[in-house]
Length: 280
Ligand code: 13P
Image (cartoon, rainbow, N blue to C red; front, top):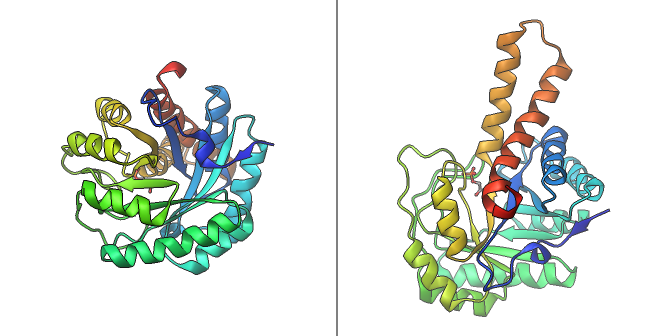
């Protein structure tokens, strides 16, 4: 009923009052919990899945669930491929009807990242879908890839990359990393603001799990329009399952299934309230 493109959900460039939450989901329960949160808070959202997680939930199966959840949701919902690394997966996401894809070429030298990103932009735009890409390098790993160190995005490279690729959203590296932090990160809000002043393309923050409310607020005020949250939903769902086991050793399948819905719903609501201050 309300499947939309993520670009329709971004705040205008100069509106730094809110950001749209992009929540990774890996099964029907997580997708359902996320759309329940959106409806309860009257807040649009992005449902996404990273290529690195697909061995647990094949894209042709999970993708249909995500699209059905978006159509069912009463709030505008975009369906996005997160950290696409192969053309095969990107093409499948577009064929299924995902409204956007990310191509993550951050492991390539700049020229190569630009060249490959342009190919994806051409492909996706021809099908009416939007594209996110990454410049610099967010730390950690989204999915079962090798963990990498942060490489803070340079202003000049971000500007050149945005102009030459014509991407619809740009993921920047300002000190965050995927997964749980062992040491609280010191975010480069100064660099974020410089990039925001130099580039009109909507900016994306990866590695949202474990940041403080102040971190989120500073990032939104600095120009971030989309914030990715994955690990916190997975962890909260796992925690709820453990609680069910602890309370009732003979708990049944549907108790666990419900724990995942509630774990995701609770986590998505918590983050939506921070990202959209008027929803508090
Ligand atoms: P976290 O797992 O740290 O929340 O990162 C999510 C993300 O950036 C997905 O691309």
